[in-house]
Length: 286
Image (cartoon, rainbow, N blue to C red):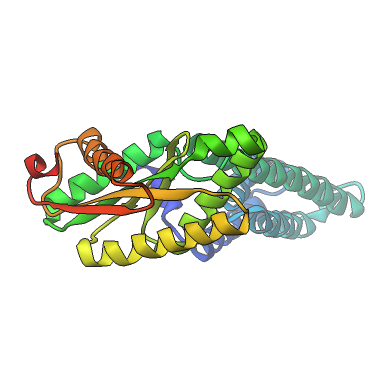
């Protein structure tokens, strides 16, 4: 396990306490060496770690602790300065430097997390994108294969979506897609994954979910989607294909093809309906 992975799994209180202990240790070493040898660079470590792994506020508190530790060592050896005030001035300058460092580190970490989030989500709806959905679905297939538990996947399409764009404009279509994504997220469980796969197609991955539980979730989702469309005054319905895998498929593409085929089957049967099947083997999902 790398140091980054180790620290990333630790709680914020753990990071903060560990940083304080390091600051105390540095303060003792600083005091023993006197003002002739600077240990400023080493105080950067607890400040950086606190700001990166525990947040901006923790970083600022670590700056204060570092400033006090250095001031304690400097105050105990003020005879080495031409004026006692120099120790306080130096501590203030160091504290300011540390605060700037903590601010930059925390800001960079937040920007990096934001970029990662944007790379994982659909720009319009905020749902996960197809690439991220594929990664999570592959992980669930592997888990289902190891632990022999079922999971379900739903493929959803907005019926007559093209008419919304043609009659009401693309802005109305965009608002509808956002409402669809929001409604799905609000009506699935916390463990479920919602993604926009492109256009007006969405997918829901339901880990460790058999057919009865999947039916409860998807019927609730469809009911709330129809209500959301009604509130917007748009004449759309929703066709959904759901596959519950008792035995996992070989690939994510196979999983999506099976759910997609059921969704199109629902459209051929008149739209605005749900088709649900149980796949005990990959061959049964076709």
